[in-house]
Image (cartoon, rainbow, N blue to C red; front, top):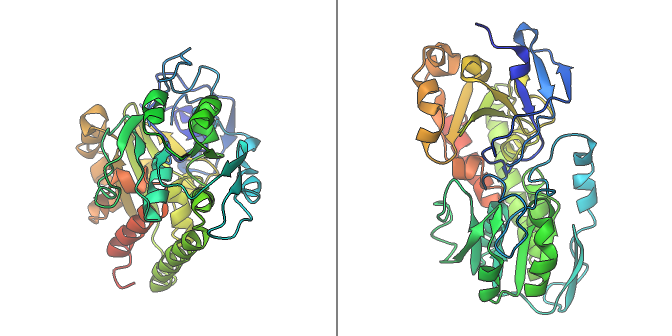
Length: 378
């Protein structure tokens, strides 16, 4: 039986997405999109957990020291016009202080925070903040993990030191954070707004608006307490040059790319407003029409895996493959009919970098993958 058109769902705008908390997506409205077969995509699926970079939302009703988001705290963006101004709002974030000058005042999502001296003991509350500080040569003393992996991301383990675990992205352990005696905490309003007041009593705390899509702006913000904005800018310039070089090597022959992710209970085609979507835009590399939407991702059923077809398919898996439908899809008859599969251009990639990294080091790893597969001469 053909899938119902409404089963093709646009996922709300966050790149740091995570497995669902078991709620059924609500459908606020439908958007007619020019897809093969005239499929209609349901917008605004209500998600209770997300990307960018944890897992299910924290225990409902818990506001204790070890809790994550409260029931009223959104774990993800849910679509709508609130996303439009994120980049514009972040233009005022950061500091006017010259490098090496302290105290300095940092403007951020929750207001202003005074940094009395250069931080040396930093706790990071998401994968993007972890990538950012390690990219700047800073080893955090505390780190949260995702629910899919309670260990240090392998691509950072040689440079991140041995930070203590302080919970997961959606379930912070405030007592463990306080015990580390940090002098700076980095996180985001989207993730931990409810814990900001408590965190600020522990140490100066600086929050971005959200993880994911604005990862470049987040990098600059995270650099500002250390006076390393110029270093962050230089790394972003190098990243952009590397992306441009791949595009130049390809010339007019730019293959379509599908970033496909297998997650517990869902399969996603990542779209324009995702971490990987920004990287593809920077090269630029086009995506199939179904992914050309201002959202994080499009969710499909296994019976719709043909919608993933492109010149290249790069697929990752969140957590244990056995908890997803990856094996069933890759072993299925429909998968074998895809053009990318037939041509040997459907390849597994690291979920840590392509979907969870949310920082410049992860972005450079993605570019290296793209260069090796798509533009080996670049």
